[in-house]
Length: 156
View 1 (tube, rainbow, N blue to C red):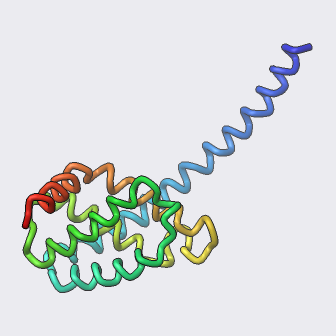
View 2 (view 1 turned 180 degrees about the vertical axis):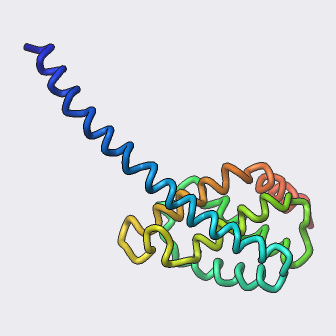
């Protein structure tokens, strides 16, 4: 009887896993498409210090009001991204690859957009896509962010 129970349980679990897998690629594709749009927009910011400063100001205000829980481990990197954007826009720091800067700016643009994949106004879920994009950006730019933090600590 025990084996029958295990088989029954395993049969019940498999369809649920398939359903989850089927939904996941569609959400991932949509998130990637929205982030790709943010990347296109970010490219126009990189060469325009005034736009970068305006983005920094807007993002700093937004981040001050964000709940920290969805961002957990990436919260310090979010703060670092903002400081890097500010330092870059002021011409104080240029030791970042253009591709990393574009990804960082795109993540911040995505973050300040209230009408992204999951609108921020939706309680609890509203920031999950933002946290996912931020985590992706951190993975792609971690070395540049770490280098910037090293520069910050060495700069008087």
